[in-house]
Image (cartoon, rainbow, N blue to C red; front, side, top):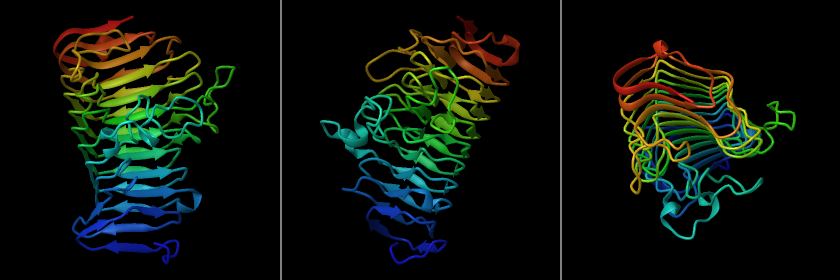
Length: 345
């Protein structure tokens, strides 16, 4: 990569390549017949880093065995990550004590930690990366799947589409998680130039079988700390089944957070919140202990703007469960084999 010029396309022939690839300029990496980047002993398979790497493309590869992410895009824009198989990454999760990205994001500036200790960056991670596209990938058997975060600036205007996110059993399938403490100001207004996970579109993905050893949702939109913001995102036309937490989950954990304006629409949501290896069904944060299709929970500040409509929810105790959320219409969604279609609190 060092001898390549910005704008070059690099073709990768079939085979297995034991390495970690760093892109700091705009390049296209195109695999032919699915060559493998074997990142055993390395932190990542591919890292796309910085403003000069904006516009890079990674397509047609198998990425496996990294200590942290299979692919990390960090502080950049207009990246395309498409048609890859990203599997068996986050191997550092299985070593103790947790180090690096496997540690909890305990304070501002702590780095790229997860909401809980042990996330290890998940499989595909857009960290403070915007206007990018993650499409048509198979993401399986990592701790977690596709991950958008805002540690060093906003993660916004991204498109996550057509991915199959399956059996990432230690965390969520697709996560939009604000880790910033500065994305909402003291006046309660979002500071979009500083941080926040906002205006992203999550559409036509399959997120099944995630978070069933350490509880995780199929698709999660959340803010972790005071000052966090995950707002104006669209979760549309996805299929979510058999995840440890509710299939589509919105969590606001602390005061002075913004989870307003999110849209959950036209999704097919089967049985979810089936629990993790050490616990029963439900969502412990919300104090809900049944299977549930869609859950919207705030522990402190009422969410005032929310759309939940056109979803087909089946085979759960609760169809939709909310706390400190705006009133929803039962008739706006369809329920099959659901004991309590809509519980609002």
